[in-house]
Amino acid sequence: MPRRFHKTVIQIEILSEDPYPDGKSLQDIAYDIEDGEYSGRIHRVSSEELDGPAMADALEKQGSDPEFFRLDQDGVDLHGDDNEPDSIPAALDEIDSPSQISADGQRLTEACARPRSRGFGPGCG
View 1 (cartoon, helix red, strand yellow):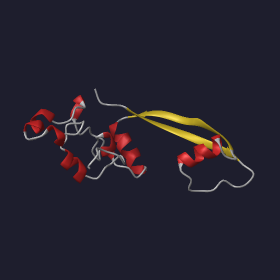
View 2: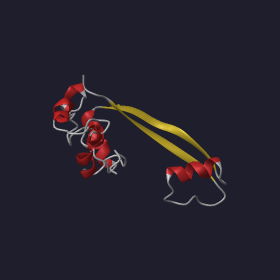
View 3: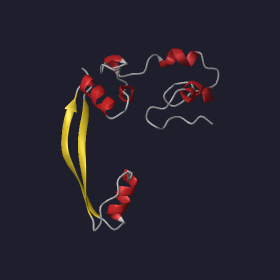
View 4: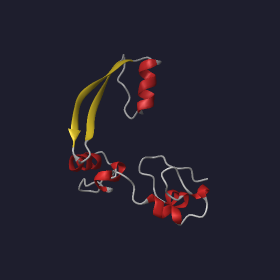
């Protein structure tokens, strides 16, 4: 069965005495609402289920990459329907030391050489 994805649009409403500044991070906005000089609320505007092609399109519109959810540019699952990584046991046969293996079974040296698509990843130190 093909994987399903979800798109949720959330709106933040802020009430203030002065215009709210542009370019603030979500962390800064949360602080301003909870501990700062602003009144605010967060509510869901919409929520919808997406298939692979629609999710790939939505990710590209955000400036992200479909590989974030292990999809190709057309929204096809890169690991097929089983959603499991390609042959980790075969890759483990080539590794000399367990310290070279990250939690997902990849070599740390390979994981460190690739750009990180989610902004975080295995330690490389």
